[in-house]
Length: 303
Image 1 (cartoon, rainbow, N blue to C red):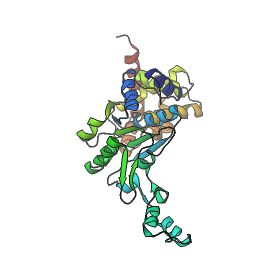
Image 2: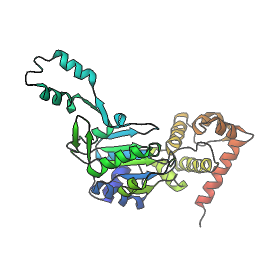
Image 3: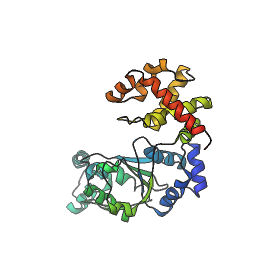
Image 4: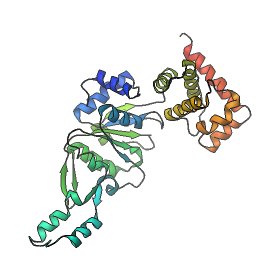
């Protein structure tokens, strides 16, 4: 997908995604060696966005598997389309003319199989896709074993269909919010990096890539995000949510968030009732803005 870590960094920046320089070698080598990249960190720290940004930068697509408790092979790999099989049997002429075995083989071919994201990711011919397995910490060990088998051999064995080998090797991104510890076998197979919420300086750089407001707006929002994440909220704001605040300020023509703007921005910043009540309590929003200004001063003061 990319010829060097420098090209990777430049292409990611061109699609408005900033990545820490020390993480570039792991991402680049995972691509080159055909290894999954396991990213752990809090929700909203940019893990999922990395997969979509790599795909956009490389001019390819994302095949996404959103994990959840109880997900099974059918959802991930796919299943035979029984309605299509019946339609074929009902409309085709002389279907048994060459015998039952050729008919069974045809009905159990890929043309009658509705592929899920894991299988689709192996079928790209000219350019590999990005396979995003999102929130892998929600699956059980049996599903981990299924993923490990696929990532070890780059093939999938499907009853009746047979073994499907990868036409190209996808770049695999596994994300985890650390609700459950991922097993060691999958960790051994993967390259590992950790994402945390960005520093004030990094968030300011991210905001500057996405919008053209004055630097003071980026600074205030970066300080606000840092302060909010330090308030031990039930749901701290993600990078994407801070970008939404930036867009809202641009639409409304607001150059600086002030205490009187509380009711405008509260729905963008507090996404649970307990967080909302905490910010509404007494002078919570005013205190939040004061904390954000303090954090910004601390960040900008010489060490």
